[in-house]
Image (cartoon, rainbow, N blue to C red; front, side):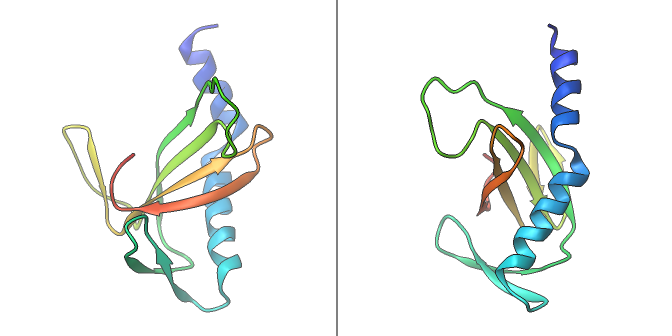
Length: 117
């Protein structure tokens, strides 16, 4: 199997529409308000609107040699969209979100952070 075939299958396993829907559902499940604070990995808080723009940066499938609780499928999304993409460095308008998925394609959890991981 070549890389192009793997990428194609990965794109069918989890679509960009599903990723956006999962993140919006996650955000809406946290609060009933239109905006709310979200804690970043450094302890800082940002305010997100439940209809925040989401740009998908990376969808990655990891071959894990040890069982970990976060699943092997991860997505990096830029909240507020991508501001700058120079020299391979993507900067979000607001922050990044890393979404962790199960092998069945169900969202497990989401981490919010400023730096690209």
